[in-house]
Length: 621
Image (cartoon, rainbow, N blue to C red; front, side, top):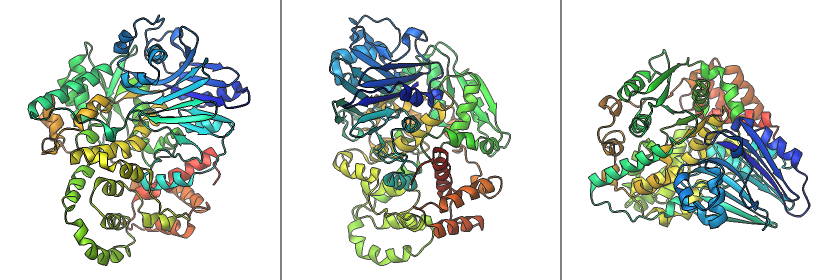
Protein backbone atom coordinates (compact mmCIF):
# COMPACT_ATOMS: atom_id res chain seq x y z
CA UNK A 1 0.00 0.00 0.00
CA UNK A 2 1.36 3.34 -0.98
CA UNK A 3 0.70 6.92 -2.02
CA UNK A 4 1.25 8.29 -5.50
CA UNK A 5 1.19 11.68 -7.22
CA UNK A 6 1.91 13.15 -10.63
CA UNK A 7 1.99 16.35 -12.68
CA UNK A 8 1.64 16.22 -16.47
CA UNK A 9 2.31 19.42 -18.45
CA UNK A 10 0.30 19.82 -21.66
CA UNK A 11 2.33 22.46 -23.48
CA UNK A 12 5.21 24.04 -21.60
CA UNK A 13 8.19 22.06 -20.24
CA UNK A 14 7.75 21.41 -16.53
CA UNK A 15 10.20 21.83 -13.68
CA UNK A 16 8.02 20.22 -11.05
CA UNK A 17 10.59 18.38 -8.92
CA UNK A 18 10.04 20.66 -5.93
CA UNK A 19 6.26 20.49 -6.32
CA UNK A 20 6.14 16.70 -6.56
CA UNK A 21 8.25 16.53 -3.39
CA UNK A 22 5.66 18.65 -1.59
CA UNK A 23 2.84 16.45 -2.88
CA UNK A 24 4.35 13.15 -1.76
CA UNK A 25 5.77 14.62 1.44
CA UNK A 26 2.31 15.29 2.85
CA UNK A 27 1.44 11.62 2.20
CA UNK A 28 4.39 10.13 4.08
CA UNK A 29 1.92 8.25 6.31
CA UNK A 30 0.83 6.23 3.26
CA UNK A 31 4.38 5.08 2.64
CA UNK A 32 6.94 5.56 5.40
CA UNK A 33 9.41 2.99 4.04
CA UNK A 34 10.69 4.73 0.90
CA UNK A 35 10.08 7.57 -1.52
CA UNK A 36 11.02 7.95 -5.16
CA UNK A 37 10.65 10.32 -8.12
CA UNK A 38 10.78 10.40 -11.89
CA UNK A 39 10.85 13.63 -13.89
CA UNK A 40 11.36 14.60 -17.49
CA UNK A 41 10.44 17.68 -19.54
CA UNK A 42 6.72 16.88 -19.49
CA UNK A 43 5.93 14.82 -16.40
CA UNK A 44 6.83 14.42 -12.74
CA UNK A 45 5.88 11.28 -10.83
CA UNK A 46 6.24 10.70 -7.09
CA UNK A 47 5.73 7.68 -4.85
CA UNK A 48 5.66 6.82 -1.15
CA UNK A 49 6.09 3.13 -0.34
CA UNK A 50 4.70 0.93 2.40
CA UNK A 51 6.67 -2.28 1.83
CA UNK A 52 4.45 -5.38 1.83
CA UNK A 53 5.65 -7.69 -0.98
CA UNK A 54 9.32 -7.88 -2.03
CA UNK A 55 10.84 -5.68 0.64
CA UNK A 56 14.06 -5.07 -1.31
CA UNK A 57 15.11 -1.67 -2.62
CA UNK A 58 14.95 -2.92 -6.20
CA UNK A 59 11.14 -3.01 -5.79
CA UNK A 60 10.97 0.69 -4.94
CA UNK A 61 9.06 3.02 -7.25
CA UNK A 62 8.82 4.70 -9.70
CA UNK A 63 9.67 1.46 -11.52
CA UNK A 64 10.74 1.26 -15.15
CA UNK A 65 10.20 -1.77 -17.38
CA UNK A 66 13.17 -3.65 -18.84
CA UNK A 67 13.04 -1.69 -22.12
CA UNK A 68 13.08 1.68 -20.37
CA UNK A 69 9.87 2.73 -22.16
CA UNK A 70 7.28 2.54 -19.34
CA UNK A 71 7.45 4.13 -15.88
CA UNK A 72 5.06 2.90 -13.17
CA UNK A 73 3.78 4.21 -9.85
CA UNK A 74 1.33 1.94 -8.04
CA UNK A 75 -0.83 1.97 -4.91
CA UNK A 76 -2.49 -1.26 -3.80
CA UNK A 77 -2.16 -4.99 -4.29
CA UNK A 78 -2.66 -7.31 -7.27
CA UNK A 79 -3.63 -10.46 -5.37
CA UNK A 80 -3.37 -12.81 -8.34
CA UNK A 81 -0.05 -11.44 -9.56
CA UNK A 82 1.58 -14.88 -9.54
CA UNK A 83 -1.06 -16.16 -11.98
CA UNK A 84 -0.64 -13.12 -14.21
CA UNK A 85 3.13 -13.44 -13.99
CA UNK A 86 2.97 -16.97 -15.39
CA UNK A 87 0.92 -15.68 -18.31
CA UNK A 88 3.65 -13.16 -19.14
CA UNK A 89 6.55 -15.47 -18.32
CA UNK A 90 8.76 -14.18 -21.16
CA UNK A 91 9.27 -10.88 -19.36
CA UNK A 92 12.72 -10.73 -17.66
CA UNK A 93 11.60 -10.08 -14.09
CA UNK A 94 14.11 -8.76 -11.56
CA UNK A 95 11.70 -8.46 -8.59
CA UNK A 96 9.37 -10.90 -6.86
CA UNK A 97 6.47 -8.50 -6.31
CA UNK A 98 3.31 -7.43 -8.09
CA UNK A 99 4.44 -4.01 -9.35
CA UNK A 100 6.66 -5.40 -12.08
CA UNK A 101 3.86 -7.76 -13.15
CA UNK A 102 1.72 -4.71 -13.93
CA UNK A 103 4.51 -3.38 -16.15
CA UNK A 104 4.88 -6.73 -17.91
CA UNK A 105 1.13 -7.07 -18.53
CA UNK A 106 0.66 -3.47 -19.67
CA UNK A 107 3.67 -3.50 -21.99
CA UNK A 108 2.16 -6.50 -23.82
CA UNK A 109 -1.60 -6.01 -23.46
CA UNK A 110 -2.19 -2.30 -22.86
CA UNK A 111 -5.48 -1.41 -21.15
CA UNK A 112 -6.73 -4.98 -21.63
CA UNK A 113 -4.42 -6.03 -18.78
CA UNK A 114 -6.99 -4.62 -16.34
CA UNK A 115 -9.29 -7.55 -17.05
CA UNK A 116 -6.58 -9.91 -15.76
CA UNK A 117 -6.03 -8.22 -12.39
CA UNK A 118 -7.79 -9.18 -9.17
CA UNK A 119 -7.05 -6.68 -6.45
CA UNK A 120 -7.34 -3.20 -5.05
CA UNK A 121 -5.29 -0.69 -6.96
CA UNK A 122 -4.60 2.62 -8.56
CA UNK A 123 -1.62 2.79 -10.89
CA UNK A 124 -0.21 5.26 -13.38
CA UNK A 125 2.06 4.37 -16.30
CA UNK A 126 3.98 6.93 -18.34
CA UNK A 127 4.81 5.84 -21.88
CA UNK A 128 8.02 7.71 -22.78
CA UNK A 129 7.78 6.76 -26.45
CA UNK A 130 4.17 7.80 -27.08
CA UNK A 131 4.24 10.58 -24.44
CA UNK A 132 1.04 9.11 -23.05
CA UNK A 133 -0.20 8.75 -19.47
CA UNK A 134 -2.43 5.86 -18.38
CA UNK A 135 -4.14 5.86 -14.95
CA UNK A 136 -6.43 3.04 -13.76
CA UNK A 137 -8.56 2.36 -10.66
CA UNK A 138 -9.80 -0.99 -9.34
CA UNK A 139 -13.30 -2.24 -10.09
CA UNK A 140 -14.92 -1.55 -6.72
CA UNK A 141 -13.15 1.70 -5.90
CA UNK A 142 -11.22 0.41 -2.90
CA UNK A 143 -8.21 2.63 -3.59
CA UNK A 144 -8.72 6.37 -4.20
CA UNK A 145 -7.59 8.60 -7.05
CA UNK A 146 -8.22 12.34 -7.36
CA UNK A 147 -7.29 14.51 -10.32
CA UNK A 148 -7.46 18.10 -11.54
CA UNK A 149 -6.90 19.55 -14.98
CA UNK A 150 -6.83 22.95 -16.67
CA UNK A 151 -5.37 24.28 -19.91
CA UNK A 152 -1.81 23.89 -18.64
CA UNK A 153 -1.57 20.59 -16.79
CA UNK A 154 -3.12 17.53 -15.18
CA UNK A 155 -2.40 16.73 -11.53
CA UNK A 156 -3.35 13.47 -9.81
CA UNK A 157 -2.78 11.91 -6.40
CA UNK A 158 -4.00 9.39 -3.84
CA UNK A 159 -5.18 12.21 -1.59
CA UNK A 160 -6.76 15.63 -1.97
CA UNK A 161 -4.22 17.07 0.46
CA UNK A 162 -1.43 16.19 -1.98
CA UNK A 163 -3.14 18.06 -4.80
CA UNK A 164 -3.66 21.10 -2.58
CA UNK A 165 0.00 20.96 -1.48
CA UNK A 166 1.03 21.59 -5.09
CA UNK A 167 -0.11 25.21 -4.82
CA UNK A 168 -1.46 24.89 -8.38
CA UNK A 169 -5.13 24.39 -7.47
CA UNK A 170 -7.45 27.07 -6.09
CA UNK A 171 -8.68 26.12 -2.61
CA UNK A 172 -12.30 26.76 -3.45
CA UNK A 173 -15.21 24.85 -1.94
CA UNK A 174 -17.35 22.86 -4.36
CA UNK A 175 -21.11 23.50 -4.38
CA UNK A 176 -21.72 19.99 -5.71
CA UNK A 177 -19.39 18.59 -3.05
CA UNK A 178 -21.37 20.35 -0.32
CA UNK A 179 -24.60 18.89 -1.68
CA UNK A 180 -23.12 15.40 -1.62
CA UNK A 181 -21.59 15.75 1.85
CA UNK A 182 -24.69 17.05 3.60
CA UNK A 183 -26.90 14.53 1.82
CA UNK A 184 -24.82 11.39 2.43
CA UNK A 185 -22.01 12.34 4.88
CA UNK A 186 -19.37 11.97 2.15
CA UNK A 187 -18.75 13.16 -1.40
CA UNK A 188 -19.62 10.84 -4.26
CA UNK A 189 -18.08 10.41 -7.70
CA UNK A 190 -17.30 12.41 -9.77
CA UNK A 191 -17.14 15.34 -7.37
CA UNK A 192 -14.92 16.18 -4.43
CA UNK A 193 -15.18 18.77 -1.69
CA UNK A 194 -12.86 21.06 -3.72
CA UNK A 195 -14.09 22.75 -6.87
CA UNK A 196 -12.37 21.31 -9.94
CA UNK A 197 -10.90 18.24 -8.21
CA UNK A 198 -12.58 15.07 -9.44
CA UNK A 199 -12.57 11.44 -8.36
CA UNK A 200 -11.74 8.82 -10.95
CA UNK A 201 -14.75 6.52 -11.06
CA UNK A 202 -14.36 2.94 -9.82
CA UNK A 203 -13.65 0.48 -12.62
CA UNK A 204 -12.33 3.23 -14.90
CA UNK A 205 -9.12 4.45 -16.48
CA UNK A 206 -7.79 7.71 -17.90
CA UNK A 207 -5.69 7.94 -21.03
CA UNK A 208 -4.00 11.32 -21.51
CA UNK A 209 -2.09 12.35 -24.61
CA UNK A 210 -1.30 15.93 -25.49
CA UNK A 211 -4.06 17.83 -23.76
CA UNK A 212 -6.73 15.25 -24.57
CA UNK A 213 -8.14 13.30 -21.61
CA UNK A 214 -10.12 10.16 -22.36
CA UNK A 215 -12.03 8.47 -19.51
CA UNK A 216 -13.15 4.87 -20.06
CA UNK A 217 -15.17 2.57 -17.81
CA UNK A 218 -13.81 -0.96 -18.16
CA UNK A 219 -16.04 -2.60 -15.49
CA UNK A 220 -19.55 -1.70 -14.36
CA UNK A 221 -21.25 -3.48 -11.48
CA UNK A 222 -24.68 -2.75 -12.97
CA UNK A 223 -23.72 -4.48 -16.21
CA UNK A 224 -22.03 -7.68 -15.10
CA UNK A 225 -23.26 -10.86 -16.75
CA UNK A 226 -25.84 -13.08 -15.09
CA UNK A 227 -24.76 -16.34 -16.70
CA UNK A 228 -24.28 -18.64 -13.71
CA UNK A 229 -26.63 -21.57 -13.08
CA UNK A 230 -28.59 -21.16 -9.85
CA UNK A 231 -30.79 -24.27 -10.06
CA UNK A 232 -29.17 -25.97 -7.07
CA UNK A 233 -29.04 -24.11 -3.75
CA UNK A 234 -26.51 -26.47 -2.18
CA UNK A 235 -24.11 -26.14 -5.10
CA UNK A 236 -24.54 -22.38 -5.05
CA UNK A 237 -23.58 -22.24 -1.38
CA UNK A 238 -20.52 -24.40 -2.06
CA UNK A 239 -19.52 -22.04 -4.85
CA UNK A 240 -19.89 -19.02 -2.55
CA UNK A 241 -17.72 -20.71 0.07
CA UNK A 242 -15.04 -21.58 -2.46
CA UNK A 243 -14.95 -18.06 -3.87
CA UNK A 244 -14.66 -16.53 -0.40
CA UNK A 245 -12.00 -19.03 0.58
CA UNK A 246 -10.05 -18.19 -2.59
CA UNK A 247 -10.42 -14.49 -1.84
CA UNK A 248 -9.05 -14.91 1.70
CA UNK A 249 -6.16 -17.07 0.48
CA UNK A 250 -5.16 -14.47 -2.11
CA UNK A 251 -5.15 -11.74 0.53
CA UNK A 252 -2.73 -13.61 2.77
CA UNK A 253 0.13 -13.16 0.30
CA UNK A 254 2.62 -10.88 2.05
CA UNK A 255 6.26 -10.63 3.06
CA UNK A 256 5.25 -9.07 6.39
CA UNK A 257 2.96 -10.54 9.07
CA UNK A 258 -0.77 -10.41 8.32
CA UNK A 259 -3.37 -9.91 11.03
CA UNK A 260 -7.15 -9.65 11.12
CA UNK A 261 -9.74 -7.45 12.76
CA UNK A 262 -11.91 -9.71 14.90
CA UNK A 263 -15.06 -8.24 16.42
CA UNK A 264 -16.73 -11.57 17.07
CA UNK A 265 -19.45 -10.79 14.54
CA UNK A 266 -20.39 -13.04 11.63
CA UNK A 267 -18.28 -11.31 8.95
CA UNK A 268 -14.96 -10.94 10.77
CA UNK A 269 -15.35 -14.42 12.30
CA UNK A 270 -15.91 -15.90 8.86
CA UNK A 271 -12.73 -14.29 7.54
CA UNK A 272 -10.69 -15.54 10.51
CA UNK A 273 -12.12 -19.06 10.20
CA UNK A 274 -11.17 -19.22 6.53
CA UNK A 275 -7.72 -17.79 7.28
CA UNK A 276 -7.14 -20.65 9.69
CA UNK A 277 -8.27 -23.11 7.03
CA UNK A 278 -5.95 -21.97 4.23
CA UNK A 279 -2.91 -20.77 6.15
CA UNK A 280 -0.11 -22.94 7.47
CA UNK A 281 0.42 -20.36 10.22
CA UNK A 282 -1.83 -19.44 13.12
CA UNK A 283 -3.74 -16.24 12.26
CA UNK A 284 -2.93 -13.08 14.20
CA UNK A 285 -6.21 -11.59 15.42
CA UNK A 286 -6.97 -8.33 17.20
CA UNK A 287 -9.97 -7.15 19.16
CA UNK A 288 -10.66 -3.83 20.81
CA UNK A 289 -11.97 -4.65 24.29
CA UNK A 290 -13.71 -2.45 26.83
CA UNK A 291 -14.44 -2.78 30.53
CA UNK A 292 -17.94 -1.44 29.88
CA UNK A 293 -20.12 -4.42 28.91
CA UNK A 294 -22.43 -2.38 26.70
CA UNK A 295 -19.51 -1.72 24.31
CA UNK A 296 -17.44 -4.87 24.78
CA UNK A 297 -17.48 -7.63 22.15
CA UNK A 298 -14.32 -9.35 23.32
CA UNK A 299 -16.02 -12.45 24.82
CA UNK A 300 -17.35 -13.31 21.35
CA UNK A 301 -13.97 -12.60 19.77
CA UNK A 302 -12.27 -14.77 22.41
CA UNK A 303 -14.63 -17.62 21.55
CA UNK A 304 -13.75 -17.37 17.84
CA UNK A 305 -10.02 -17.04 18.58
CA UNK A 306 -10.13 -20.18 20.69
CA UNK A 307 -12.07 -22.16 18.08
CA UNK A 308 -9.59 -21.32 15.32
CA UNK A 309 -6.47 -21.35 17.53
CA UNK A 310 -5.39 -17.83 16.62
CA UNK A 311 -2.64 -15.72 18.16
CA UNK A 312 -5.13 -13.40 19.74
CA UNK A 313 -4.55 -9.94 21.16
CA UNK A 314 -7.11 -8.02 23.15
CA UNK A 315 -6.38 -4.32 22.88
CA UNK A 316 -7.96 -2.68 25.93
CA UNK A 317 -9.51 0.68 25.19
CA UNK A 318 -11.60 3.09 27.20
CA UNK A 319 -14.59 4.71 25.48
CA UNK A 320 -13.08 8.11 26.26
CA UNK A 321 -10.11 7.26 24.04
CA UNK A 322 -12.43 8.14 21.16
CA UNK A 323 -12.71 11.64 22.63
CA UNK A 324 -8.97 11.83 23.31
CA UNK A 325 -8.16 10.77 19.75
CA UNK A 326 -10.84 12.90 18.13
CA UNK A 327 -8.62 15.66 16.76
CA UNK A 328 -6.03 13.13 15.57
CA UNK A 329 -8.80 11.31 13.69
CA UNK A 330 -10.14 14.55 12.21
CA UNK A 331 -6.62 15.50 11.13
CA UNK A 332 -6.35 12.11 9.42
CA UNK A 333 -9.37 12.89 7.22
CA UNK A 334 -8.17 13.68 3.74
CA UNK A 335 -11.74 14.56 2.83
CA UNK A 336 -14.50 15.30 5.37
CA UNK A 337 -16.68 12.39 6.47
CA UNK A 338 -19.46 11.96 8.99
CA UNK A 339 -17.97 8.61 10.00
CA UNK A 340 -14.55 6.99 10.43
CA UNK A 341 -13.52 7.89 13.99
CA UNK A 342 -13.90 4.27 15.12
CA UNK A 343 -11.81 3.01 12.21
CA UNK A 344 -9.00 5.41 13.06
CA UNK A 345 -8.80 4.43 16.73
CA UNK A 346 -8.84 0.67 16.08
CA UNK A 347 -6.42 0.91 13.14
CA UNK A 348 -3.98 2.91 15.25
CA UNK A 349 -4.13 0.36 18.06
CA UNK A 350 -3.48 -2.54 15.68
CA UNK A 351 -0.60 -0.73 13.98
CA UNK A 352 0.98 -0.02 17.37
CA UNK A 353 0.74 -3.75 18.08
CA UNK A 354 3.23 -4.30 15.24
CA UNK A 355 0.94 -5.29 12.36
CA UNK A 356 1.27 -3.71 8.89
CA UNK A 357 -1.43 -5.69 7.04
CA UNK A 358 -4.86 -6.64 8.40
CA UNK A 359 -7.85 -8.40 6.88
CA UNK A 360 -11.27 -6.92 7.56
CA UNK A 361 -14.79 -8.32 7.43
CA UNK A 362 -16.36 -5.22 5.91
CA UNK A 363 -18.46 -5.99 2.86
CA UNK A 364 -20.40 -8.93 4.28
CA UNK A 365 -23.43 -6.76 5.03
CA UNK A 366 -23.50 -5.40 1.48
CA UNK A 367 -23.29 -8.80 -0.21
CA UNK A 368 -25.52 -10.80 2.13
CA UNK A 369 -28.29 -8.35 3.03
CA UNK A 370 -27.05 -7.49 6.50
CA UNK A 371 -28.15 -3.84 6.65
CA UNK A 372 -31.67 -2.69 7.62
CA UNK A 373 -31.84 -0.96 4.22
CA UNK A 374 -32.31 -4.40 2.60
CA UNK A 375 -35.40 -5.34 4.60
CA UNK A 376 -36.77 -1.80 4.28
CA UNK A 377 -36.31 -1.99 0.52
CA UNK A 378 -38.22 -5.26 0.27
CA UNK A 379 -41.07 -3.84 2.34
CA UNK A 380 -41.31 -0.73 0.20
CA UNK A 381 -41.10 -2.66 -3.05
CA UNK A 382 -44.23 -4.62 -2.09
CA UNK A 383 -46.19 -1.44 -2.72
CA UNK A 384 -44.71 -1.03 -6.19
CA UNK A 385 -47.73 -2.31 -8.13
CA UNK A 386 -50.25 -0.12 -6.31
CA UNK A 387 -48.01 2.93 -5.74
CA UNK A 388 -49.07 4.86 -8.88
CA UNK A 389 -52.72 4.53 -7.85
CA UNK A 390 -52.04 6.12 -4.45
CA UNK A 391 -50.89 9.36 -6.04
CA UNK A 392 -53.99 11.45 -5.20
CA UNK A 393 -53.95 10.31 -1.56
CA UNK A 394 -50.20 10.94 -1.23
CA UNK A 395 -50.58 14.37 -2.81
CA UNK A 396 -53.23 15.21 -0.22
CA UNK A 397 -51.17 14.03 2.78
CA UNK A 398 -47.73 15.27 1.65
CA UNK A 399 -48.19 18.93 2.71
CA UNK A 400 -48.96 17.85 6.27
CA UNK A 401 -45.75 15.78 6.42
CA UNK A 402 -43.88 18.81 5.14
CA UNK A 403 -45.00 20.86 8.14
CA UNK A 404 -42.84 18.80 10.51
CA UNK A 405 -39.46 19.97 11.88
CA UNK A 406 -38.35 16.38 12.31
CA UNK A 407 -35.60 15.24 9.98
CA UNK A 408 -36.98 11.71 10.09
CA UNK A 409 -40.45 12.84 9.02
CA UNK A 410 -38.91 14.93 6.25
CA UNK A 411 -37.01 11.93 4.94
CA UNK A 412 -40.23 9.88 5.04
CA UNK A 413 -41.88 12.64 3.02
CA UNK A 414 -39.17 12.31 0.37
CA UNK A 415 -40.03 8.62 0.04
CA UNK A 416 -43.73 9.43 0.11
CA UNK A 417 -43.33 11.78 -2.85
CA UNK A 418 -41.43 9.32 -5.07
CA UNK A 419 -43.24 8.44 -8.33
CA UNK A 420 -42.41 4.72 -8.02
CA UNK A 421 -41.04 2.24 -5.49
CA UNK A 422 -38.01 1.17 -7.52
CA UNK A 423 -34.38 1.11 -6.47
CA UNK A 424 -33.38 4.31 -8.27
CA UNK A 425 -35.99 6.27 -6.27
CA UNK A 426 -35.85 4.42 -2.96
CA UNK A 427 -32.14 3.96 -2.24
CA UNK A 428 -31.18 7.62 -2.23
CA UNK A 429 -33.86 8.37 0.36
CA UNK A 430 -33.07 5.37 2.59
CA UNK A 431 -29.44 6.52 2.82
CA UNK A 432 -30.03 10.27 3.00
CA UNK A 433 -28.71 12.00 6.15
CA UNK A 434 -30.19 15.49 5.86
CA UNK A 435 -33.48 15.77 4.00
CA UNK A 436 -33.90 18.20 1.13
CA UNK A 437 -36.10 20.37 3.33
CA UNK A 438 -33.37 20.50 5.99
CA UNK A 439 -30.74 21.35 3.38
CA UNK A 440 -32.81 24.22 2.00
CA UNK A 441 -33.40 25.50 5.53
CA UNK A 442 -29.81 25.25 6.77
CA UNK A 443 -27.89 26.28 3.65
CA UNK A 444 -28.02 29.35 1.45
CA UNK A 445 -27.60 27.24 -1.67
CA UNK A 446 -30.27 25.78 -3.94
CA UNK A 447 -30.02 22.02 -3.55
CA UNK A 448 -32.98 20.88 -5.62
CA UNK A 449 -30.86 19.03 -8.14
CA UNK A 450 -30.09 15.30 -8.13
CA UNK A 451 -27.16 13.87 -6.19
CA UNK A 452 -24.49 11.77 -7.87
CA UNK A 453 -25.92 8.45 -6.65
CA UNK A 454 -29.43 9.42 -7.79
CA UNK A 455 -28.11 10.21 -11.26
CA UNK A 456 -26.05 7.01 -11.44
CA UNK A 457 -28.91 4.75 -10.37
CA UNK A 458 -31.33 6.40 -12.80
CA UNK A 459 -28.78 6.15 -15.61
CA UNK A 460 -28.30 2.43 -14.95
CA UNK A 461 -31.90 1.63 -13.95
CA UNK A 462 -32.70 -0.75 -16.81
CA UNK A 463 -29.50 -2.72 -16.20
CA UNK A 464 -30.04 -2.89 -12.43
CA UNK A 465 -33.62 -4.12 -12.82
CA UNK A 466 -32.25 -7.35 -14.36
CA UNK A 467 -31.04 -8.45 -10.93
CA UNK A 468 -32.92 -9.99 -7.99
CA UNK A 469 -34.29 -7.35 -5.61
CA UNK A 470 -31.71 -7.90 -2.87
CA UNK A 471 -28.94 -7.67 -5.43
CA UNK A 472 -30.39 -4.40 -6.70
CA UNK A 473 -29.84 -3.02 -3.20
CA UNK A 474 -26.32 -4.50 -3.15
CA UNK A 475 -25.51 -2.66 -6.39
CA UNK A 476 -26.89 0.57 -4.95
CA UNK A 477 -24.93 0.12 -1.70
CA UNK A 478 -21.68 -0.67 -3.49
CA UNK A 479 -22.18 2.32 -5.78
CA UNK A 480 -23.17 4.65 -2.94
CA UNK A 481 -22.53 4.38 0.79
CA UNK A 482 -19.96 1.58 0.51
CA UNK A 483 -17.69 3.21 -2.04
CA UNK A 484 -18.03 6.80 -0.94
CA UNK A 485 -18.13 6.42 2.85
CA UNK A 486 -17.16 2.96 4.09
CA UNK A 487 -14.25 2.21 1.75
CA UNK A 488 -13.06 5.81 1.70
CA UNK A 489 -13.03 5.99 5.51
CA UNK A 490 -11.28 2.63 5.76
CA UNK A 491 -8.56 3.77 3.37
CA UNK A 492 -7.93 7.23 4.80
CA UNK A 493 -8.08 6.20 8.46
CA UNK A 494 -5.99 3.02 8.19
CA UNK A 495 -3.42 4.55 5.86
CA UNK A 496 -3.05 7.57 8.13
CA UNK A 497 -1.32 5.17 10.55
CA UNK A 498 0.43 3.16 7.78
CA UNK A 499 -1.82 0.11 8.07
CA UNK A 500 -2.91 -1.76 4.95
CA UNK A 501 -6.44 -3.16 5.20
CA UNK A 502 -7.57 -5.92 2.85
CA UNK A 503 -11.27 -6.77 2.40
CA UNK A 504 -12.00 -10.32 1.12
CA UNK A 505 -15.73 -9.66 0.72
CA UNK A 506 -14.89 -7.03 -1.91
CA UNK A 507 -13.44 -9.56 -4.34
CA UNK A 508 -14.97 -8.83 -7.75
CA UNK A 509 -15.38 -12.51 -8.67
CA UNK A 510 -17.28 -13.15 -5.43
CA UNK A 511 -19.39 -10.02 -5.91
CA UNK A 512 -20.30 -10.89 -9.51
CA UNK A 513 -21.40 -14.38 -8.50
CA UNK A 514 -23.43 -13.41 -5.42
CA UNK A 515 -25.31 -10.76 -7.40
CA UNK A 516 -27.05 -13.56 -9.27
CA UNK A 517 -28.20 -15.52 -6.22
CA UNK A 518 -32.03 -15.63 -6.03
CA UNK A 519 -33.79 -13.64 -3.31
CA UNK A 520 -35.58 -16.66 -1.85
CA UNK A 521 -32.18 -18.14 -0.94
CA UNK A 522 -30.44 -14.94 0.10
CA UNK A 523 -33.25 -13.33 2.11
CA UNK A 524 -32.15 -13.67 5.75
CA UNK A 525 -34.18 -15.97 7.98
CA UNK A 526 -31.67 -14.94 10.65
CA UNK A 527 -28.65 -12.66 10.34
CA UNK A 528 -26.99 -13.33 6.97
CA UNK A 529 -28.32 -16.89 6.95
CA UNK A 530 -27.23 -17.56 3.36
CA UNK A 531 -23.61 -16.66 4.15
CA UNK A 532 -23.64 -18.65 7.38
CA UNK A 533 -25.04 -21.75 5.67
CA UNK A 534 -22.60 -21.38 2.78
CA UNK A 535 -19.80 -21.69 5.34
CA UNK A 536 -21.23 -25.08 6.32
CA UNK A 537 -20.90 -25.03 10.10
CA UNK A 538 -17.72 -22.96 10.23
CA UNK A 539 -19.13 -20.47 12.76
CA UNK A 540 -20.23 -21.30 16.32
CA UNK A 541 -23.98 -20.78 17.00
CA UNK A 542 -23.12 -18.24 19.72
CA UNK A 543 -21.65 -16.02 17.00
CA UNK A 544 -24.38 -16.60 14.44
CA UNK A 545 -27.29 -15.81 16.76
CA UNK A 546 -25.75 -13.10 18.92
CA UNK A 547 -27.25 -9.65 19.01
CA UNK A 548 -25.52 -7.27 16.57
CA UNK A 549 -23.49 -4.81 18.61
CA UNK A 550 -20.58 -2.76 17.23
CA UNK A 551 -19.17 0.58 18.27
CA UNK A 552 -22.27 2.46 19.41
CA UNK A 553 -20.72 5.07 21.66
CA UNK A 554 -22.65 7.87 23.38
CA UNK A 555 -21.70 10.68 20.99
CA UNK A 556 -25.04 12.35 21.69
CA UNK A 557 -24.09 12.64 25.37
CA UNK A 558 -20.49 13.62 24.66
CA UNK A 559 -21.51 16.50 22.39
CA UNK A 560 -23.54 17.96 25.25
CA UNK A 561 -20.82 17.41 27.87
CA UNK A 562 -17.17 16.44 27.26
CA UNK A 563 -17.18 17.75 23.67
CA UNK A 564 -19.53 20.68 24.28
CA UNK A 565 -16.94 23.47 23.93
CA UNK A 566 -15.34 21.82 20.87
CA UNK A 567 -18.70 21.37 19.17
CA UNK A 568 -19.97 24.81 20.14
CA UNK A 569 -16.88 26.48 18.70
CA UNK A 570 -17.25 24.80 15.32
CA UNK A 571 -21.02 25.18 15.12
CA UNK A 572 -20.68 28.93 15.70
CA UNK A 573 -17.76 29.22 13.28
CA UNK A 574 -19.76 27.34 10.67
CA UNK A 575 -22.77 29.59 11.22
CA UNK A 576 -20.63 32.54 10.07
CA UNK A 577 -19.86 31.00 6.68
CA UNK A 578 -21.59 32.49 3.68
CA UNK A 579 -23.29 29.31 2.53
CA UNK A 580 -24.90 28.70 5.94
CA UNK A 581 -28.22 30.05 7.19
CA UNK A 582 -26.90 31.21 10.54
CA UNK A 583 -30.24 31.41 12.33
CA UNK A 584 -31.38 27.95 11.24
CA UNK A 585 -28.13 26.22 12.23
CA UNK A 586 -27.94 27.86 15.67
CA UNK A 587 -31.61 27.10 16.26
CA UNK A 588 -30.99 23.43 15.40
CA UNK A 589 -28.00 23.37 17.79
CA UNK A 590 -30.07 24.87 20.60
CA UNK A 591 -32.86 22.36 20.01
CA UNK A 592 -30.30 19.58 20.33
CA UNK A 593 -28.87 21.04 23.56
CA UNK A 594 -32.35 21.30 25.05
CA UNK A 595 -32.97 17.60 24.34
CA UNK A 596 -35.29 17.88 21.36
CA UNK A 597 -35.49 14.19 20.43
CA UNK A 598 -36.21 14.96 16.77
CA UNK A 599 -32.68 16.39 16.33
CA UNK A 600 -29.99 13.78 15.72
CA UNK A 601 -26.42 14.30 16.86
CA UNK A 602 -25.21 12.88 13.53
CA UNK A 603 -26.86 15.74 11.62
CA UNK A 604 -24.98 18.36 13.62
CA UNK A 605 -21.78 16.34 13.46
CA UNK A 606 -21.61 17.01 9.71
CA UNK A 607 -21.34 20.76 10.34
CA UNK A 608 -18.70 20.28 13.06
CA UNK A 609 -16.53 17.99 10.92
CA UNK A 610 -16.78 20.17 7.84
CA UNK A 611 -15.88 23.35 9.72
CA UNK A 612 -12.85 21.62 11.27
CA UNK A 613 -11.71 20.41 7.84
CA UNK A 614 -12.23 23.77 6.13
CA UNK A 615 -10.35 25.60 8.87
CA UNK A 616 -7.47 23.12 8.91
CA UNK A 617 -7.04 23.25 5.13
CA UNK A 618 -7.71 26.99 4.77
CA UNK A 619 -10.41 26.50 2.14
CA UNK A 620 -12.16 29.46 0.54
CA UNK A 621 -15.89 29.59 -0.02
